[in-house]
Length: 100
Image (tube, rainbow, N blue to C red; front, side, top):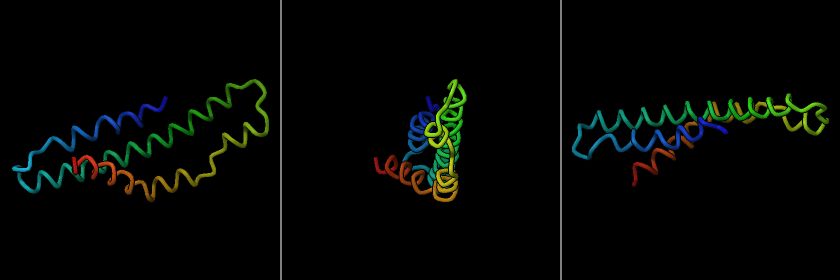
């Protein structure tokens, strides 16, 4: 189970709701930026853990086939796209909670 995924699903809403509309502007903007940063980091950790779990599953197989080994090979695109563009889903997720 990928606990980093559930961590960012559960952790971000309390961060977003930690401010009231009457709070100072720097606090409202700062907590949103902090929530986006935390969400971005947790998304990256979730992707890394996903590949670690897949690798552990293949290593636990007594005789993995070529198809199993191909399935368990990280081509790196997932990791790179998450690092470079992971801020987009993070900002979107935080933005939806801000709209609520």
